[in-house]
Image 1 (cartoon, rainbow, N blue to C red):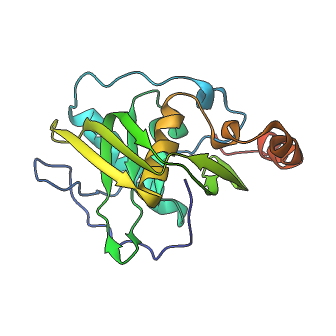
Image 2 (image 1 turned 120 degrees about the horizontal axis):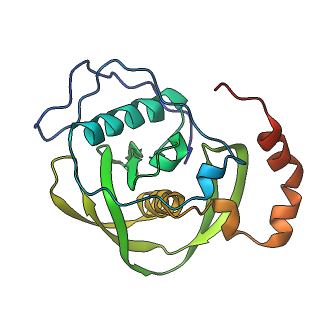
Length: 199
């Protein structure tokens, strides 16, 4: 999910270790998948074990997210990997600084309230629409150290988490708007679907 343009992060060069934080090593960002790619409509499979391969995927996804310059969330399906893994980094919001979040097998346990806000997607570039979502949610998942985590989120964090979990279920934000609004976006969606992309 994209947001405003952000300042490039200073990414240290290192391997993923058993420390609490994920540290990026120099790798090539993964190839984003775009609207029209069948993988975006598939349901991702649960991650049964968080080993080196899974941690490295998380590292590559973080690097891919930062390489976009304006991304704040990414699901594994958006890079063609059908595993239940999401990355979120909303940076600073409401004078609070958020750390990057890596969640395997995220599950939304509860939701309350309702709020409408503008939403976009890295896999549907240059298209935005107002989407109604729950305002507050509780999410559980597993971090890179295989520890269970529980997050009570509201505002932008709640929206991004819902957006990325939707991706893991093959749902795009445009599925959550009216048919009339989707019809108005038809030409833009067709342009994205027909665009030539690097393979």
